[in-house]
Length: 200
Length: 174
Image (cartoon, rainbow over all chains, first blue to last red; front, side):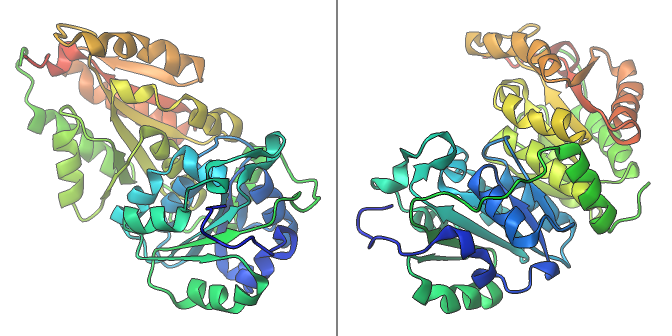
């Protein structure tokens, strides 16, 4: 985590429910690895969640595609620091498109948890919220302590969109949860519940 | 430029076919060859143009549109195909429909040597990731090729790239 910030005291495993109390009202995308596990456990893989197991760097763009196509729905994407930095340009893409219904939540553990916990850039000098602001995202916020959960929840609910929330979490495993790895069935399940346009 | 293709004319023909097929999101990285198509999509109230930072974003963005029943297209220069392979895992793994339009460099009359390595690799790279390539060399092939690509993506649910060759587009003079 960026060196000028205090150590985090947030455990990622019971985090998401504190940030979004009404997940049923959102369409949710979770990026690969820990983001997907935590999100799958949080919602028990509800029909409004699509989880990725690869395609690293794609979660935010996928959520943008949903947000632009379903402007009346609230959309949130859960991603990690490693995935976000693999395609940080997507922050500029979101800023330009300026969807009014998209929240980006980055779980920043400062490491590549899935491959053995190797340190990532945010454990050294990189500050993701500053990058989001620089890209032109309307609102950005960083939290490092559970004491900040109420502020973060209010930010996600009422901040100027699009919003970027960096949640600095303690290193450590994501929620232990056996999730569906079959994207084709995940796609069909999500579409069955959430297709809103009339198909041609 | 070599060749006599009328960009306004061919771009309009592609656009109308895509719009009639219900494509609403035109995601793109700018290229001379897709410039007119993007301008048409920006001006039409049925469609939205989405400027990307990297072409791979468009693969995920079009997949996101599909998740709520909308349709997207991804426009890029041939060099951008090299930024896409891992993200195309979504197409094969998730059976997402995917429609790409690739405007070629480095294949016919190209004067910039930097365009050749990726230009020549476009079709092998796309085919390695399971994307069907439909190539346009002459103006009289364009309409049917566009319709075929639309059918492949949105009726059959495949990944498909409409490849607008430099023979069709003309080569940029340096």
